[in-house]
Length: 300
Ligand SMILES: [Zn+2]
Image (cartoon, rainbow, N blue to C red; front, top):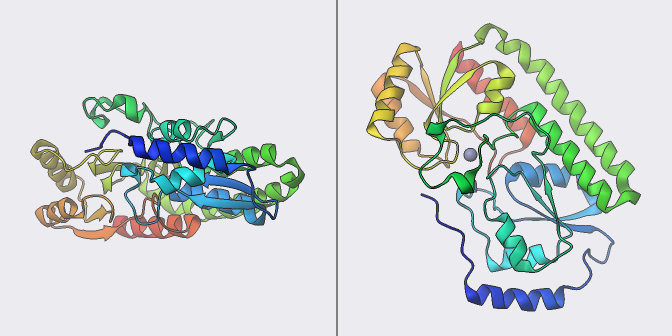
């Protein structure tokens, strides 16, 4: 269950002190100070920004990305940043409030999922009372190569706007990443051709964009916002689905509920394997490749 975002009065008082002292943004080497959130946002901004940017990461590696709340230290760092890069679509429901609390009026938010062809969420993907926090679309846009490329383009645009003198440098980094991502896509898309419409079972519903790109279908133990364990009815549906579709591998994620996935696997006589949704760690392109290989292997 998600908790509502709260900042204690003490934290706000502390923030006022930070704001008063923060002064000029950017460090002594003339680098642009920016803040990032989840792993894909952090990696993309670090890669495009290169040595022209001082990047702080708010959602730490290995944490549950959907359950993050900023600390006072995060807020202090944020108050000194010129740009806050977020993925958007409900991945960072705390961001607006955090930004407001810093009192930093010239802090720009760059939403890396902007301009994408989004996957709408169904009724069943929402928990009661959570709609306002979560939005209407699947937020896991980085789990497709086209999505990653668009995020990188958005990062490049925001960095170039903040630092026009380095625009050519950012563009070069973007071009390099785009070339690598397209090469990976060209290598793997044909491998999935014979599995069009095939299903795989995951821990939480993070792989919608990957499925759309590859022509696959995902069934998941938890919803897109990782709201906790499935109801007995949902569990029964999953068991029936897995049996009917001859599912031999149940994928799980370390940050989701691996125990439920393990129970499901036992119930249907399948093995378990991990997939990395990249939310909290993992090199972007290498992890995509690993995920592809594991899914391909499960479908052989
Ligand atoms: Zn997720």
